[in-house]
Image (tube, rainbow, N blue to C red; front, side, top):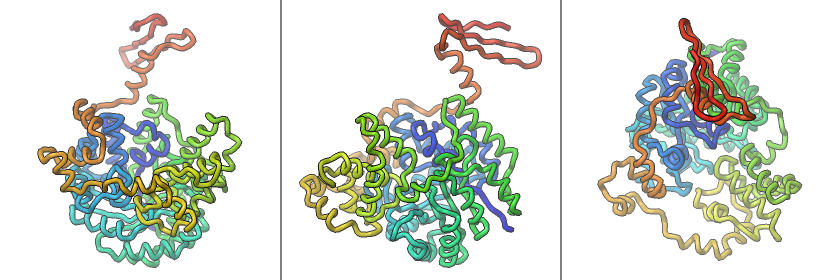
Length: 496
């Protein structure tokens, strides 16, 4: 039995999967960083351009500052950035020079490991991005083989793509990414050997969500078949629609004879921190999921389905949900089997909803579906159904979108925004509303300190009492006993 390494996904993918509306702040990241650095992870799945936009838009925090601070707080563990094609924040592709500047700034601020994921599996985008990342100083670049089930995505499809990526000197490793959690142990036994046979000595990693409870078994099969790195989460950020629990996985791997070189004490402390954070902020805990075979057909993440159910409930059309799901399967096939990773689940379900509730199929077409068919998000993996394509491209709105001016090149954006901005601020202003970046700048540096235990205390004191019960907090240590009790009227009293 060999050695297995772990990548932790709590801060980005686990957070996005389970706490998406929150997405952690700089101070919350910094509080746990020294502990995570001691665990012994191969890397930390840390940030994406979407997370950078959220930091600016909702938290008024500078994402470049966050990267710098976390890099200083975690010198031993590489921070990972995941990117989807030649894109930065916007879903439409940027030019090569613009993306070169993005990668240069990410490396300069502290990102050491990059994952290149193209939802269309466009090999040109994959290979070009990897080359630019390496030229700009990335230490490690990994190609994503994003797993899905369709008539197109068989083992040969993934093996051929893996061979092209492995032949590039700019990709250091590859990973199978299963965002829907639909990789069965049986399919893993054919897919993993097919890929490994084509990538030579380059390492292969596995990333699979727990959406229907398969990943905990597929991970053990992966280890048996030579997977060298597995992606996990801890405590409340594991399971559910997130990834397998590191604590349980480590125990299982060791029980099967594998060596996992991590600091168990540091892992326990990290789990304790995230547990306290979830309790302090009222955030949900991921729980083990039951097997649901319907996911193998529609491949929709739980959050997307929840949103659709809520929309139908508001219209008093909950009974239409099975019809919408069946229509989503049909729409996905007609659109060339896009992989169900953001933004494509939202795009497919929006069209399915329109088809079911409208007077005719494709009578109404959302702009994002039009842009998809126009290849604004990249070239579809399989051709779009000719009749559907003709229907969409013949719409007046399609002609309006086609007439929109192209995105600015790097030089054009520089001329418009001026040359006095730092590269980092320029990149944000080039793709985000000016007022959001202005608000971030006005807010000043992000907070540096966060303690979930203190947060629990301050919440208990500051929140209005419920049902007439005034909350109290007892702090006790040798020589001191302090009770803080909030009056049901106002203020707080202290008894020592």
